[in-house]
Image 1 (cartoon, rainbow, N blue to C red):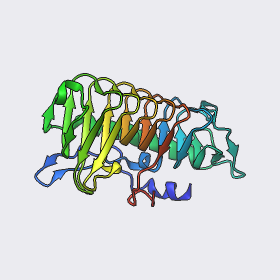
Image 2 (image 1 turned 90 degrees about the horizontal axis):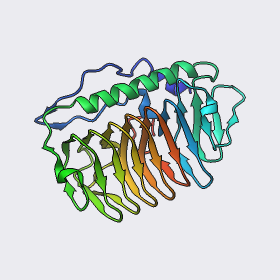
Image 3 (image 1 turned 180 degrees about the horizontal axis):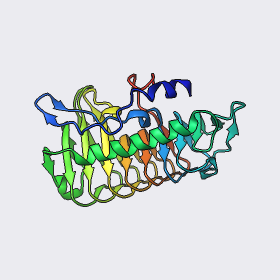
Length: 255
């Protein structure tokens, strides 16, 4: 928690959206939200068999909104642990600096969503007419006015280097079918992939997904689904015997 507090002075809440310039697309600045693998404004639920690697948190609601995790309060009162979470659990009603940390993190999450949604000059609009199944997508900014889907058992390949950035602006919901996969090629990294989704994101059973999900509403992972990235939701995050694993991101406190 001390490390998170130290970041408060260096977060960039309210920063202007970066432009799509000649040197490529700038990543979305997550601020303090980038220290959480799951962040929610209305609750986090998980069933038995779920696994989370990284810190999770809720704000401005209380810890009672974290369900199914079997929370164990630390003696400090500043965070809890859980058998399902390889990391700490924070909530707005915890002691010490936690309330400030959580308020800042949620503010940064909302600003990151606005940043991603506000990027201009897309490389393509309505790619695949909203169906990205079978596509190979180069780095860049992509925009859809409506929903986006990845069919059952299908895959989409994101091909680029370790420094390349993808931002996907989805005007409605994102639905990933059962057994569908996001494949990274050529050194592409989950920490540089941003899915800005206006409404709900749903990952089907045994789906394998990559990237940072910035959702205007809920994020739902069905049985056996796996997300390598972050689930940052302005309403709830629900896991059903599924997993969320933080991306390898040395820029976020070694996470």
